[in-house]
Image (cartoon, rainbow, N blue to C red):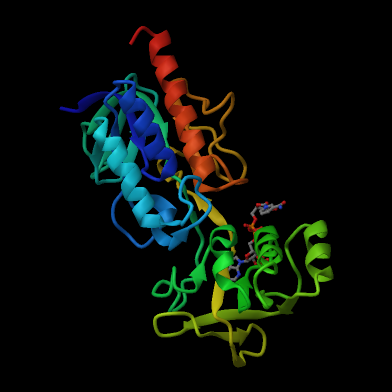
Length: 319
Ligand code: NAP
């Protein structure tokens, strides 16, 4: 028999856990399906579990480690009665009322949960290169967020991989700190918009390593260089950098909602009037619906909005 809840929150990054704090304090006893441990950003705690120090979350003048911040948010949510479940949502049926949510075996006849309102906060994941050393040195010189980590690379030579708007934006931002930024791009032409290209090319602090792929991240404990390969000649070389920013795109974690929730062309959940989706009673917050700001603090703010929207919607139905 499925367990019935008024509010189920899928995801436990800053958006999901803020939604949990608000829903729990509103006496809605939310259940949070927090994800499963893995090396990617859909694990409990989300992308902040993959960063080291967070210096731009207000309230922490000396900074706080990403995992520590998420543990504090989790403790705050449980203190008010949010129930945490370490599992992933494997299937949903949003045509039924209450909504049906499966964790574990998606083929099971019975859903695991039924819920009146659903808050989707499953986040996004940075696409990674998948080369040796990248995973091991993530947080130790390998980063996916210049806004978060750029400051730690003052005076250093760092590389950014990618040729789209994200890569150029990251590279331009990093020139504030780095002594030199090298963009490693697999082709001889950028994908980024004209204006970003002009800015990057005009910046005297960015160098381009065209038609090269990163094949390995080198270093023992922290990044000490990159092995790179010319994509046409196959010739191998080394780039002596102490940081690597991977900026080859992001992907929202929306697979289980496809075909049921309306998505933007780029795969993010389409929201309107705050956190509302095309399905009444389903709310979305955080990076799963935001490809523009993508900050912990904006995700937390939108999680608060989703919880308030859900609470008001339940109230309007007399629940
Ligand atoms: P994107 O436009 O998809 O660009 C990804 C880049 O990474 C491409 O240059 C691609 O190379 C490269 N790449 C992909 N997989 C790779 C791999 N395995 N190894 C090496 N390189 C790889 O992604 P994005 O830059 O994140 O942008 C996403 C969307 O957000 C775009 O619509 C963009 O305009 C928008 N955006 C806008 C702004 C802004 O306006 N300020 C800022 C950020 C993002 P190829 O070119 O060879 O395919």
